[in-house]
Image (cartoon, rainbow, N blue to C red; front, side, top):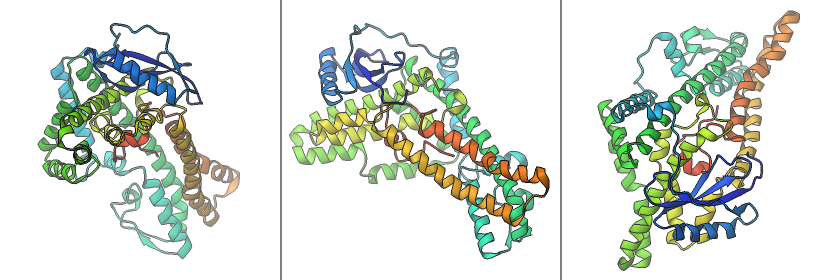
Length: 422
């Protein structure tokens, strides 16, 4: 699926069934899948004209479709997306947003064991390994803070020298990587449940981005995080990378007499961007590697983003048609960006081997395990620490597992860290 595959280009009705049309790329080796390149066109002719432009740009990878344009779509949602009332889905989504906010400081009140779990983040194993390496290098003695993830719960307040740190480090790193795997899968299940509710509210009850944003702000206010909302409002006014700023810049260049035309174009891009994000979430169901517990992106924050619309708006307002079209093509599986993320993956392996494997081997040199079983344990410990992280990141970076396909990572992240590697 992520090799250099070819795509059939098709013009089809919108997934929203609102009378508009879009341009979709369908992988030749996975005909059930489709990726939205453009949309929100009021007529078939408009969509076909844009489709022809995409064909000219990606002639070596795109072929025109022989599929007739169907009058309607067969939208199939999971039972969670179809078997609940709108009110029930709204309440479920609010509960899931509260779980998202629980990752913020001072918002967790759990039993001690669960507190250990939720203190651990993706950076925990690396932080502990780097601290240990500093202790080994300079022969330091350290007092373990009680707030330190995992180790603080075991040895908080104790002073450890080089031999003690060397003895504990392999076990602490192994435990933290196991817990990270559990947390990543729990987070994936929450994300997948949010996805079901978002698709149900959008495709069955007609919700759009503004209503989801309002729901998110309501939960933030109810949970006592009103300051986040005010900060967001201030940042939106200040941040130059918004559709508002694209509009103002375009009006300055083209004159006020074109302001309505500019506004209309940017509104279409904003609506199309939301539709493309919903389409990407919906299409995940047909990805061969998709499983609910591996969903790596928070779907609510994903659909609230507008980075894709902003980037395309800048290209369109500067009359860079080629750049506008390329931004949609670059995120297709097997296209330019998937080759870039593969290179990032191999760089990540090098970082993991050095940062986690190095201090672990150093710890065994300082405090070796005795006997045949001890030597066997040392031999197996390093791959036991590294393998789960490498396998997870391989699925993320190389196979795009758990990530809405058909969009670039820049557009998905939207300035936030939505795609979280281990």
